[in-house]
Image (cartoon, rainbow, N blue to C red; front, side, top):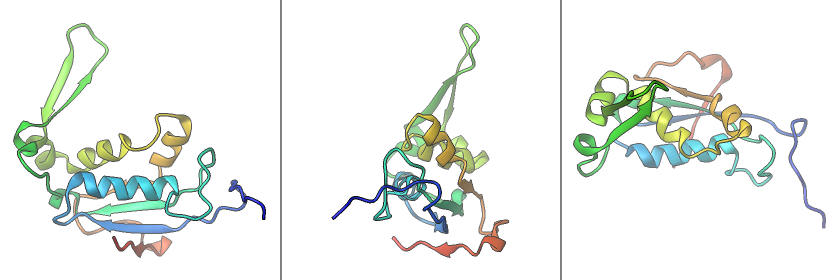
Length: 142
């Protein structure tokens, strides 16, 4: 018996919809990262891009458990001296929930060119409407 290795010619990509309504942010990010990497497929190959497209709907309705909404902060540096910025997740979930979901998924894909390519297949929407009806996405059950 031989081992099959996935490559760009043998991969078929599907589109999946994940609904974030009343689902913890991290739990949904794990599922999205798994689909983006292709780990849900039996032909998963770590060095090949064999993942699918993911549409996350209702990102504003995702929840953070415990006291994370008030206590958790996201930090980034602008590159200028003394320019460490921070934003609380309570503000981020109100003003830009798409960013919160994207950052959660970004932390779960590899920090390589392969991971950046996989992250381009993630689409996050604040509400229930999306622009990808032509791709015939199917709802992912988890």
